[in-house]
Image (cartoon, rainbow, N blue to C red):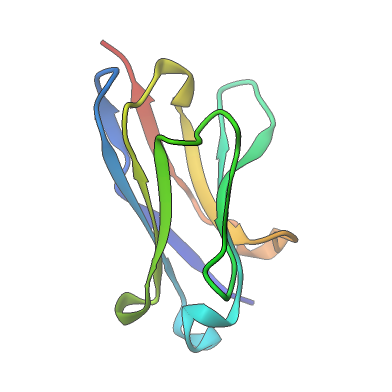
Length: 118
């Protein structure tokens, strides 16, 4: 199965920005072969989709992040990035990436913590 490694999280003040990166293992070949989603799980909450990008580059966003988050691919790094702007405290969560729309249970990584707080 594909393995994903997430990075780029941290502590940021409300209104700030972070750029997350998700690198897929080489065994999938090009990142263009799969659709990838960025998911997030807030403390005590369910894991939910924040953004996704298809093989063709079509994107999908949760209503709560539309206009603030941008998902993109970096084919040279076999990565899917998530640019997060105008962050809000409710964006605080552990962010994960996985195949979309059917995440592989065996492919969940450790995620990267995003904390938005003043």
